[in-house]
Image (cartoon, rainbow, N blue to C red; front, top):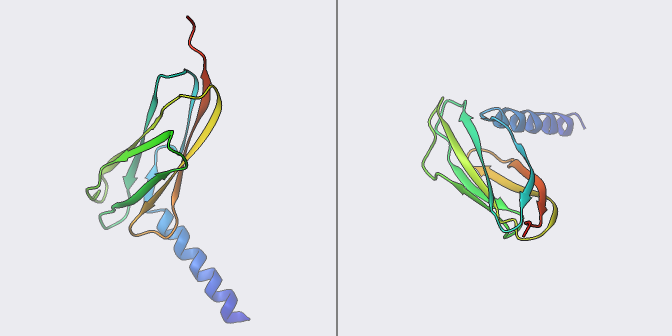
Length: 123
C-alpha cells in the first residue's frame, strides 16, 4: 500500500513539474460578440521555461469550425512562440471551443479555450 501511494505521489509530482516548463500568457480568450461569417482569430503566446527546447507534437481542435496553426520548429529556453486559433463563425449562437496542445516532452496536454457569441450580420 505504501509503495502504491508513493508511486501515485511521484507521478503526480512529475506531471506538475512538466506543466511548469511552459507558460502561456493566457489559456482562455473571450471574443465577445462576433459577426456571422467573419472568422475570429486569437494568438496564444507561450514561453519555454525549461532547460531544453520544446516542440509541439500536435494541437487538435474539438471540431472543424476551429483551426489551430503553430510553428513546428523547436522553441528554445527563454523564447516565446505562438499558437493562432481561428473560429469560422458560421453558426449563430454562443460557442466555447477547446484546443488540446501536446508538447513532445509532456504527458499532459495544455488546454486552450476560445469563447464568444456569433450574431447575425445586420443588412
